[in-house]
Length: 90
Image 1 (cartoon, rainbow, N blue to C red):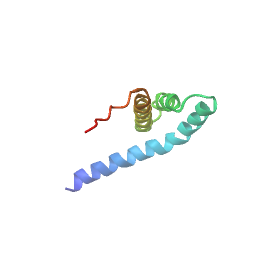
Image 2: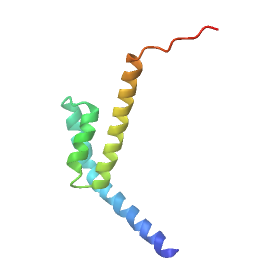
Image 3: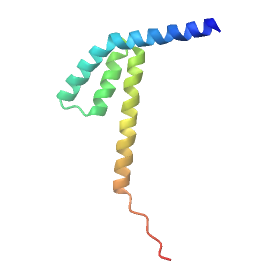
Image 4: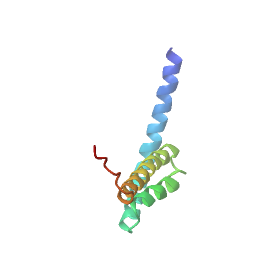
């Protein structure tokens, strides 16, 4: 049981170190994108693309929120455009 725990601990440490090293650059790029007027979803996508060469785990983390934002926006648009369900009268 000792070896699997050591293996997982090592993987966790490598992932955390990779994210910590690339995070300042990712935040700088995100700030630049947003300040230039880019929508937040596009800014997240851009950061994920650019930071992928430095840290794949961090790029993966930036793609998750992008997907979630797009899904939420699409759902919000659909609820506004769909007609209300008719109410039945008993």
